[in-house]
Image (cartoon, rainbow over all chains, first blue to last red; front, top):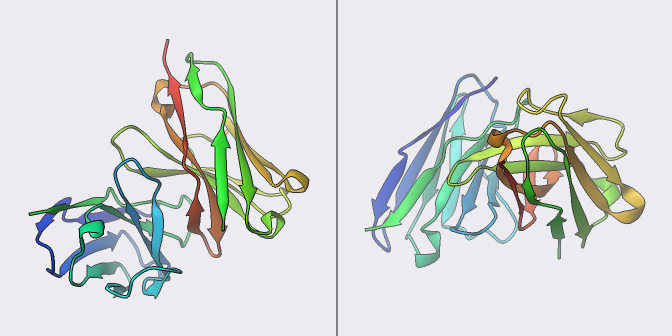
Length: 107
Length: 118
């Protein structure tokens, strides 16, 4: 099974800051990676797929990059609605594993 | 607008069975793979099952293989998850999810809570 390791587990930042969340796959996943956002009490929402493609309606302050085993999610100019939990996901092969999540909190 | 509405969750004793349903609308249901993803209380996300467009192929992780069965009725735009031999570790919110190829969980329902406890 492909293991997905996210870092950091939690992150504190201020409005307007830029933050980066990392995701490390246990083997090459050939950019077949997605990022999700989950707000408290809500369902997860797809943000980015194919490592860098924005899902419909996702603001352009979100961006994804990486290749091979290392990927990152960058959020520019943090807005109040961005404080949430973020997950990466292996889409290459079953089982379709998720990272443990990164909680982004307001400083 | 894509809508996925789950139902059927509740409290069930260990070893018993439960069937979840998901009513889909806002897209051509028969054209999409569908899946269930669960989230234990205050925990992360776990993929539970996927079914292809016709229902002829299904996929499961080892944690539920042999106990859970995913199925669909394209005429009713509905997805199901039959869960048997339930364990306490199956306690979670179960989400019905629309899949974009290769395997992106594109749209999620609001979830239904399953609690396995005596």
